[in-house]
Structure formats: C-alpha cells, structure tokens
Image 1: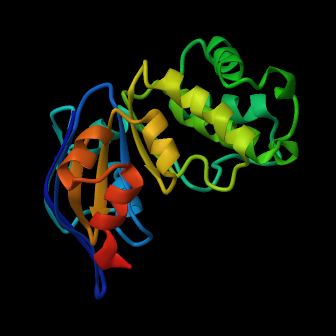
Image 2: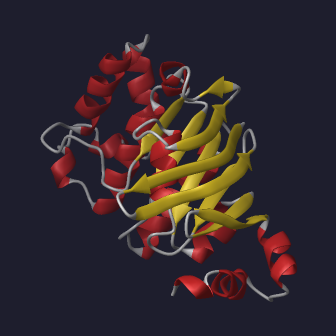
Length: 237
C-alpha cells in the first residue's frame, strides 16, 4: 500500500504537488490521469525517490519515505517515459547488465524468463537500437521488473506506440497486475478503462476525483470517463 498525505512539491514559482493526498492499494493497477502539468510525473518521481518532496508524508508498504528511502528503493522500480535501454547492447545483454547491478541470483534463469515473458525470444541477440518502438518499450519494462519489485511505476508506457504495439503492451501489463502493484500514468482514456482497477484524476497538483471508472462517472453525473475527465479538468485548459 502507498499512503500519500498532504504532499507538496514546488519548482521555483510552480507548485507541482499542492497538498496531494491519496491511498493506492496493494495489488491493484492504479492510473493517474491528468492534463500536461497536472503533476503526474512529479508524483511518480517523488514516490520513486528520484526527487524529494517539500512537505507531507509518504509511506510505501509501511516504510516512511523520508526516514528509509533505501528500503523503499528495494521494493519498487520505475519504467520512465523514455526507454531505459542501452541501445548498443543486445536484449539479453541489457537484462544481464541490470541483473548484475541488482546482484540477482540465478541470473541466467531470470534473464531467460524475462525474455520469454515479454515476447522477445526472437530478439534476444539483437541490439536494442534495432528493435521497434514497441519492442524497446517492452525491454525497458522488463529491465524494471527483473528485480521483482512489489510496486512498479509506469510513466506513460505506450506513448508514441502504434495500435498493435499498444495492444501487445496492454497484454504485458495485464499479466504484471497479477504479480505486483502497478501505478500507471497515461493520457489515453481507453488505456485507463482497459487496465485500471481505480483511477485518480489530477488537476493542479491535487487529486480531483478517485475511484473506479464507474464510480467517477457516477460522482460527476456523466455518461463516460471522457466526459467526467473533461468536466473535472475544464479549469486547467
């Protein structure tokens, strides 16, 4: 479980997180939805210890983020917007490198399992730079889960992918949901509806609404997630 209580983060004159409070449950796929500048990526960066918050409290599986960030890092991992792969290395070499960095036991077994899980068997010996965008994205996520995190942050995982590549990646994420908590940021409403157990709609560094898609449409009196989202974020446009 992730408990976020009254969290603030400011960059010079811009308040990115403005007293944000939210609870993310164990073993759910939770989507953060919002316009550009709503604070989604900033929140992911705070939760994954990339940047420090200015105020408030965060607990990750009961661990205080401020008091023991190293312990938090051991149970989380992140797949950022940009593909986090070494393009000159092959798929297998990328996974082996990250496995070595984490000191993973049974490295060969874990690497082989990751290659199979992410549908990269035929590309195992191919340099990452020669992969398609969708294949690079799958490899990037594979690198993030080889450490077997309890919580995985996916920051706009299907950004820029074509329809087929998105569908393949959705299938991968659906499988990951069975093994860990997944926190997803995205601009795609269909992605939210397809993958999410619950959704948090962010505006101006705060959570404006949270719940299942059905609960949010009922809360706003709208007929669809798109209508609900537009009504909740109209002040941000």
